[in-house]
Amino acid sequence: MTCTSLPCAWNKGSLKRNPGPIRDTQYDSFKINVKRRAYFDPRPQRLQKNEMTQRDINEFVFSLLGNPKETLFQKHLRVKYEDEEYSLEQLEAVYEQCQQFSDNLDVIPDGSRVIFLSPTDGTKTYELPETSGQSTSKMWGTMRSIHMTGTTAHQALHLSSSTARKNFLRRHLWGLEPFTCAAVRYGRKSEPKALAAYLKCVQKCDSTATISSNNGLLKREGYPEGAASVDGIVHSEIRPPRLLEIKCPYILRNKNPKHFREVLSKTQLDNFCLGWSQTRGTFLKRESPYYSQVQHYLGILGLDVCDFVVWSKRGIEVLEIPFNLKSWEEVQAAQSTLHWQYLMPEYFLQRTVRDLDPRQLTH
Image (tube, rainbow, N blue to C red; front, top):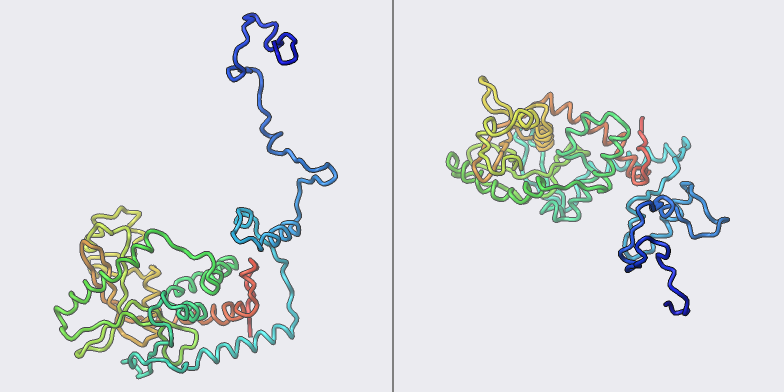
């Protein structure tokens, strides 16, 4: 009997005539309409719509900006800005701003510290103020973003599309979409150990050798757009200063770098920065981004030689990389063009932060 005092009709007419608990009931022919649930809209029909314009999305995302925490909508929905046209007067104003910007970069700031004199032409290499400590300094990050550095050398040579230039400016100038991974974290963590191992190795041949490794952002007179954040400068009483560049490849973290040919697969060898030949022995590949990076540092600092160190806890490999004037001129030309035609106008127009293609500034 039910609470209505009427006979229970549950499962009435079944062959078993033995109603069981409702939780045990199965409907073999019943199929759930998942799509109907997914598209269910509780709003009145006059307010229901499936299509949203970009303007609707923009207004919705803007309405979420006041929330104390970022929502999932903000991670997936992006505000799309309309492109804008610039008059000739506006472009001339931007050109004048860029010219003033370039002139300011050519001035040695007050408080700069002279590191050494170039052994080639005697020009001063100095450290920009408040940039010591590199990534731990806020000023270092700010000044680095408006200069062309060693990590941008290879990119400057190969940025061939507007999308590639936009992504470069978003990362380098505005610090958006920063890249990090286990390999990067391993390299940063291992650098002090590699530095100590290199110093121990070099002092076997030169007891007067010392390393200045806590330098900030370095510049040299005559190169306004260029700067260098180096791993170290090797000083000695018996030979000129030389550059120190350290790499701690994650792929060799448990292997001796001297044996890279035996422990890496063919694909890994093709992508690795080092190569080997019977005539040259171990060498740094010209097509490696590290080669352009080293030539940028040598050119900016006016040095002749770089000690390129590949380290792991199993061993150390030290290569002597000489300054290549032709390679440096190619890198400098590409970086100067990228800096003047794209980075400086982007600094004032701020297009890539709105996901718009950068505007090229021509004379």
